[in-house]
Image (cartoon, rainbow, N blue to C red; front, top):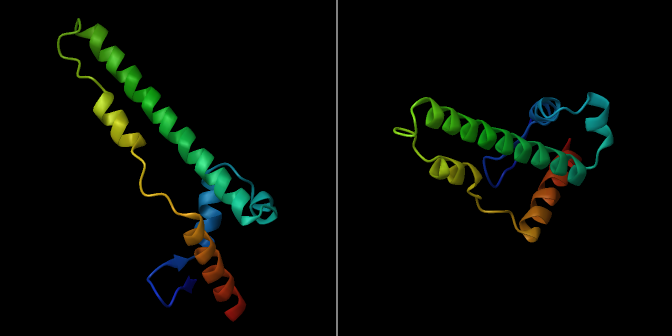
Length: 109
């Protein structure tokens, strides 16, 4: 496990592989991908998970609406908005700094 000296960020290969496997990548595909390709796959999988969750919330809303005759069904808008609320995105420069840190840590081993 690599630990960056400036911060408490950990780069754990086990976690990288585990996340890749959970997103549907095969072990040999994980090692064949470049970092940007791996990140794109993971982000696409996370977006798909959010879409699936939003669809489940909407389905639950319509079930509650039609079962109760529309009396007690609460709008799912606030839940879905929180689901898709974007956190601070990493800038290009911050991404380059992160890559440089990882490469420096890998060269130390």
